[in-house]
Amino acid sequence: MDERILKWLYDIKISIDEIDIYFINEEKDFFRYRNNIMLKRAIERNLEIIGEAINRIITRDEIYIEKISNAKSIIGLRNQVIHAYDNISDENIWSILINHLPKLKIEIENLIQHSK
Image 1 (cartoon, rainbow, N blue to C red):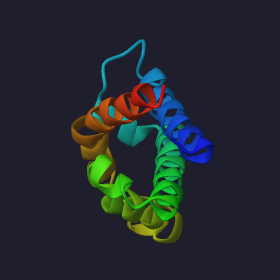
Image 2: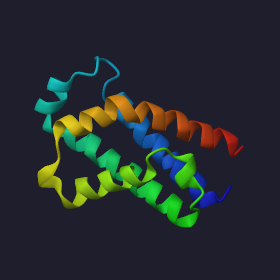
Image 3: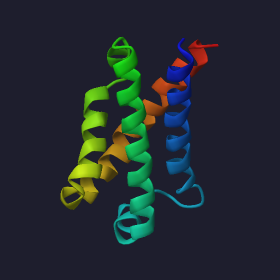
């Protein structure tokens, strides 16, 4: 595996792990998330990093579009967070955290593991 791709996969893993750490001592609670501006911004920043890393990966090797579920949607989310910040839906971000991030975490960990 290309060393840069592996580095970006680790960037994604680190960002997902950081998001998980934000909830380590508490259950994930939408209302806590929605009312905590610092938590929201930290999560959004990590989602930006994830989207940018995936964009770099698929730009370098298009085969990863098939290996990372919803790669284009993740990049689209990154663009929305950065460029359309005033249209970000708390509900949408929360849905991504609960429904999509766990699957992405498994995929990324598997890609890293298979690179060894």
